[in-house]
Length: 59
Length: 474
Image (cartoon, rainbow over all chains, first blue to last red; front, side):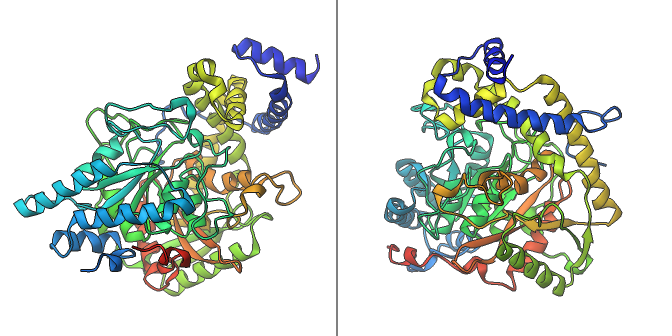
């Protein structure tokens, strides 16, 4: 499956339709976002507690 | 007293003059509305003017003085509010055709608190569509009308810089108070998360969004924060903890305060040398006032933008989900693309981003604690403003645009949830304002105000105004 087909499939699952003229810029944004996701996945995170309720204090 | 002479007076001074009967709120508001009508064709800072209600509120403010009522700290003062904040009976469109004509029945918490403090709301200030910062708003920079006004609280920053109002409200999810403050030469605070209630403010992300005060001086900004901070019945988003009176933050001895300077992230390659120089000179001046300065290293800051964006994209799209399906064609293309991107952001990315945020927060907390810091000083924005057509230009050949560079400097305080105060620290060779942000500990706004006020007491950057405005003064 090429990247555009993958994008179209994701959009279909999400329930949104994307015009042909906006598909290319959305794909560029999506590929950029996937690079960011890879950077996050490279972090050793087993011992990290996710922020679920946001308490900005750190004491 | 001649109204013309009050155009650039501080909010604190004007409040005193109104309280003492030297000038009436009605006179000030009438002058303000005339001044706005004179400046608006040039800068387009307002999405809508609330002239009738402002006149009525000013008249009531004057009556309250005549009756000898107890007065709030903002009594009779004209203020602008970003068009993301609900105003009862007046359109709140969020800068979008999607909400065109939407009239809330109640005020947002921040608007209610402003009114309770005596402020007169004169209008709704322009925002990028839903504060996403993707489209170019009609607003233009106060100092150069070919240039970007900052965003997304564009109208709030510009209206202050051209002397339209004495205080304004912005929102900051990734720098949206600090960027317009910086590029228009005014002061803006992104407060600690949960310090100011968000109920009634069109949201992006519940863990990144903040509502912040903007003004021309640090003292004015602190006075506004005192009025809007803290709990409010029916608003679960604001802290119930007791809070200091920020307007009285200025008696502290600055020699007991300590600032960290981080170079790798906040002074990276995309930072304009003129911006870096102005911020370094400001830091040196603050050191000469007695504040201790120490160079620090903070690991993991390169994860700020990836983690923040994953959260921002998904959270924002969650709120817009029904609107995107019902009125998708009414968004501007750039906003719609971001909302579509948020719809297909992977849940695993979101979950990992929330873990990474705690890693970043721990990195910053450790540096604050190990060095006993009160603040970290950094450029508010890596660049001065730029012509609007250059917003998407690659700054350094790395693929980073001017807009994404703004996020680079703005996002850390939001991702961690800590306060950041932007203060004017100079002008570029082209005459464009430069801002420095002081990033603090959670609920550590007071030391930021103390440092910022000490700096402004020995500099005059905040006293300079665009020359063209003088010809518009009525």
